[in-house]
Image 1: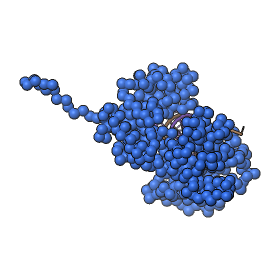
Image 2 (image 1 turned 180 degrees about the horizontal axis):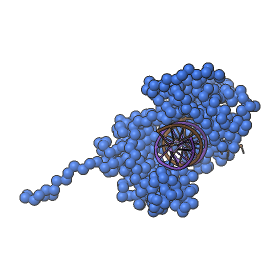
Image 3 (image 1 turned 90 degrees about the horizontal axis):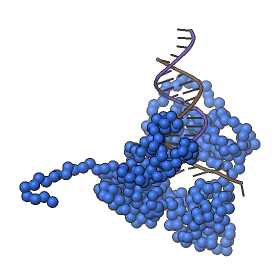
Image 4 (image 1 turned 120 degrees about the vertical axis):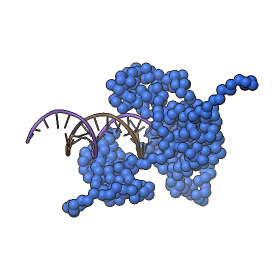
Length: 418
DNA sequence: TCTGGGGTCCTTGAGCTG
DNA sequence: TCTGCAGCTCAAGGACCC
């Protein structure tokens, strides 16, 4: 308030404060299933064990109940008692996720299916419906982009969003915009999400876990000591089980304890890059921008066999799988419009040891035969006397088809022998 | 009857070159 | 010509993420 004759202080327009949001869909895979099959609500359901194939589901139902006419439409409203027919606890798969009633029995993501079956044998197992998951994923991301266009895709169920310059993005530290996005996603998909808004991606990611499900957490720079430092180091995105164990070995359990260590000490014990990074994140510093576009670095296909295979004794089977993997990678590259020149293989032996071999050729390719030939040469460089559990084929050093750098002139060489 | 699949990034060591 | 060094690329493996 000012009286006549008094000078009025004019507040200069202030620059917007950096506000970054991390959005995480709540129990995404399970929620997509419950949207499709509301009759499963409240029941223990384990999602995983491979891809959903409707023809396979129909075949199982027809076999079990031949007296009934089964059509594709029936799959939309299957009675609960038929669900156990659609999946089966077998093989070497893992659970992608589990509904809360199943989690009460100790079943969780990344758990082997056989163990899940032991813990909760009455749970319904549903193979993943990737097409439906991808459809809902596209839908919620499109909804976000219409409100806040600077969005970074971080996988099927999570994104970063730059709120800084979005109208309303500064109100209540971003809470108002977060609320609008939550509401819009629910209207578009029927699903809930949790959002953390903070000065950067690092803290936003941690903040989105504070209130789940359907929560919003707003963190300011000055909250670091009170909200972030008491958290265990494992909560930092980039500190996995190995780094956490090493930190624990040094008596560092919380982010606050990490922050108290000297930068030089961290570099000495954790390396120049990782040590310096640990120091930065402990102090809540992260300048990474929200990236709206990114190019893939590599594409690969891999598969775990139903049983461990031996290169000599199972040569035909292994050869067929190898060829199929090369064809799949080539198909992925062609479909997405890429070529690559680093071709490699990955093997996991029966003892879970992983080996990789790759080599860079002098031209770009996305042809299955060419990939097969080069990957075959890589395969000759590994120990094939051990039984193999997993085989993978990878193509890296990618370039967009049509934007390939010109090939160097090559003298004519000897004819390819195989 | 533990432990998937598809990615990225970093470190380390070998080999090459000026 | 030999040696040491720095800088670079490539290959392999490890850690991590969703």
